[in-house]
Structures are given as structure tokens and as C-alpha cells.
Image (cartoon, rainbow, N blue to C red):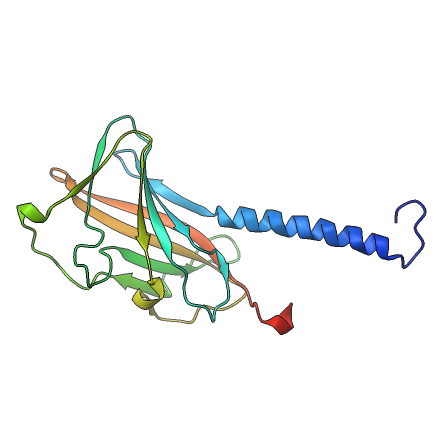
Length: 195
């Protein structure tokens, strides 16, 4: 209680509501930045940035983007093979893992996507993205909910990890490199009667 307040005064309740409101904002900001990635041996980091990191299990899985950042000191080439066929899905692999209470994830994915095609390459169909040191390249992945095959349901009040893999076999001659990006997200029941 504050000096001059009497028990049951609404002033204490108002102060507590403000404190919890600011704590909620801090939690949301920290969850929004819950993306990380691996840095490949050529200095390029791949990370995943989700449109939303908290959503209801009844909503469609949100869109996201892959962000490739050259953190090395040399110029790097990436094979531009993200959407080789315009009418099909992206040429990436997506996995969703349930996070366990100890911070680890389950070994088997509960949802996945893999490009269902192989392409024979011709010299005139190969294009590259050049990344100078410090430069970024973003690849939007839209309508991800249409791509995923679910082996189990995503459930509210659970935490998950999204993992995206991209294989580059042409960016550097004779080297097949795997880029891995990850992001944490959680499902929260947003029913109006639960608020």
C-alpha cells in the first residue's frame, strides 16, 4: 500500500495493472526476437523471422521469411534456388518440433515440409545472389500453412521450434552447403471467454 491509501482503495489496483501491462509488453518484445540461426563455414548466417510468434492453434500457421546475412569478411554467392518452379512450393525443408520443459526439443518433428520435386539444371537457369560483407537477403515464405504436413496437432499452451533448411550446391564450386534457420514460437488460447 502507498502512504495515505486505505485498504480496498482502487489506486493500488490501478498501479498493479500498469505494472503488469508493462511486463506484458516486455515479454512480447522478447518473444518477437526469438529467432536465431546457424552460421555456415562461409560466414553466412541464416535466420527465420516469423510474422507472429504467439498465436492460437486454430489460426493458420503464420508466414515467415528466411534472412541470409553475410557476417564474414568476403563476398559470398548464394544459389538463387528458393522458388525454382513458380507454381510449386519453395525448395526448402521445414520442421516443427515440440519444445520440452527443460528447453530441449523432441527428436521427431510433429510437422514438416520438403520440396516434392527434383530439377535438372541447365546453365541458363542458374542464378546467384551476391552478398557483400554485412549485406542481407530476405526470402519470404508465404502460405506456409498450405505447405506443412502435420503428424500431430499443434496445441495451445505449448512452445515449439520452427527449423528451416536450405541446401546450396552451386554457390561455391564443389561444395554443398546447408543453411539452417530457427525460431521459437508459442501457442496461446485467444478465445474471448478465456481473457
